[in-house]
Image (tube, rainbow, N blue to C red):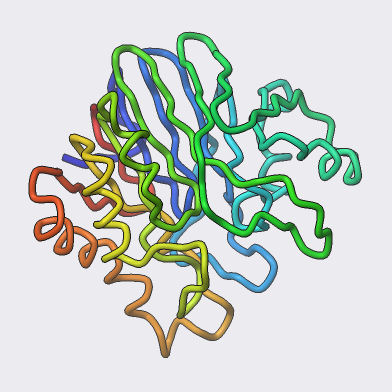
Length: 258
């Protein structure tokens, strides 16, 4: 069952909100798409911002959109931590004088960090970071460590190649089920589409992410259900589309032992 962030577990996943997930696999600590601030541009966080995450072995950035690569959040983390980014992303960091050890990966390429192996996999998503328009690609990642295999989808539509990503077996799939607004554009999944992805991936466990955290200023009163229902709706859809997949719906700050 989910528990407080301060509890101890050898292998666990902690959802910190939106697409930010802390993976702990027998000592290896990997953080995905850190967005840690109460406010990001026109978006307001609902609920408290995460506490300090401590030592990390790697940070994974799935793509360069502002709600996945938040440079002020990245500056809050240890500057010595390697940052894994889509190949070609170095220019974005250089333009902003953000000095980090970058590990640039293309689809199918791998890197290792203190007992965890990270493999970049396909994602289907518009990858441009406005106002810059250079294309760098969007990625998902499969993180392997201590006999566990975790898939972090980043932002993506459903695509047939998900079946191959799950082909070697997945212990956990972290699947985006909504976004930060009141409607979704191309390159995202709603709860039903994410359930379709779960049916292709066939993980032992699916956890919905990318929901229930940020909304534009002034939207919460009229659209508060957007903060509440995508996770449980995803669980209902998985029971129909992928009945062999267990779903755990976390709240930001909750963790689950693996």
